[in-house]
Length: 563
Figure 1: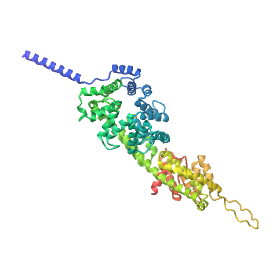
Figure 2 (figure 1 turned 90 degrees about the vertical axis):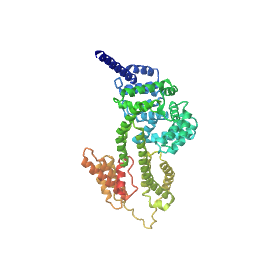
Figure 3 (figure 1 turned 180 degrees about the horizontal axis):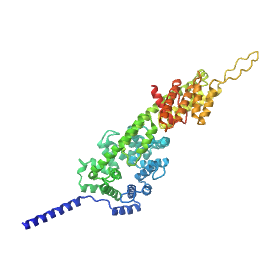
Figure 4 (figure 1 turned 135 degrees about the horizontal axis):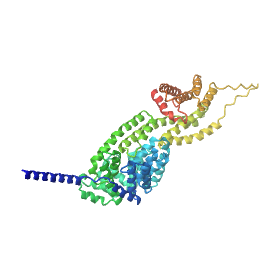
């Protein structure tokens, strides 16, 4: 019996050690200080991918104290070697104002450089930035217009840029057909990034109908210089990409350069080490190797979980931004969009939000163009008809100012819209002619009387003096006093500036709002809406004066409530 008990004990310990060693051999390698030392050495030898990884390790504090300032320096080194992800991170840091100084121009420049190099998230970020920061719209639209000029001359990189500008909505209304057309022109000239883009488009089947043979054709053309294209091509030619053996994965990786192989290896180590502890880093690592790692299926379950978690977390903010667009509250949308401008945003959710923003802006632009067209038609009639011009001589300067202000405001909101450009061109043709005709037009001379009549005393038009005085007080910032005088001019029957007096009354009330006094703020806002509505009732073409765009949402609300 004792002998049998000893044998059982020995067998138990043997089995326990066997299980321990088996499990230990199956455990994936984890990130160590030694791994960081090797990575840092590669980074110091100007390996751009290694520099990017060292920056991420410092940003998230993996085995080292978290320090975004040090991370930014490593990203800068990677960006200096045209590493698109490094450019992207620097652009986002400049937009956020931490750890780098807030600099809208620098953020825009970095994001464009990254997007030109083919980094898809930079392209999507630029589309969101266009709506988030109105002050950058003209600059973004101007850059895209310069690319368009070069693209028409046959420049392949510019054609590629125009492709993603139309695809993502960067300064241009989203147009899938135009996007594919410009990608094709660029790809036909052998531009690899455009060939890759076309392969992705035909594989995904969203921008254009899914066509696996077309996807395979374009991936094959770019496979020689792009490892990601070679990997996609291999997957397309396999019945089940997840059944690849380790040998097949290794064979595929041999076609990648040493820097990329090390990059994939380190990201996999970070995923295994940080899963369950640092989801933000795992999310970034997963997105970085998704589409680059032949054995991505091994970490697919981990990555899918962090993708879903990030999507759920972002979803509520995206919905809030959609509601702001629905309410035409662009200021609130901008605040929410600023919070969404993070390096690890969900690409598909931001794409959907950008599409929603373009639909909202397009609707507003159509309404603005309709009003501008009506104003322009009156000016064109004044050029054609002497009688019309003489009868409306006093109103023509007012119409001219209203046309210019409305057109200027609409073009700031949507600078690349072709309909506004056409209206501006017509206006540029009409204005000089109208000015010349107005100068030639002489007032009617009274018939000469035999008896010299005494000159009648100069009579001021009722309300003009008060209106002028109200403007002076308004300009001095005394809004309560100005509102009272403007209200006085609205009671003068037939006064030609009644509509504008109401508009200025509305602005005065809104300018007096103090956010700390919620009850009073609501009353003043309602007064502002009512004043705007009264102005529009006297002249449906009335508009806010130049420089008061911040009250446009309230003005628009007043219009909507009148319908």
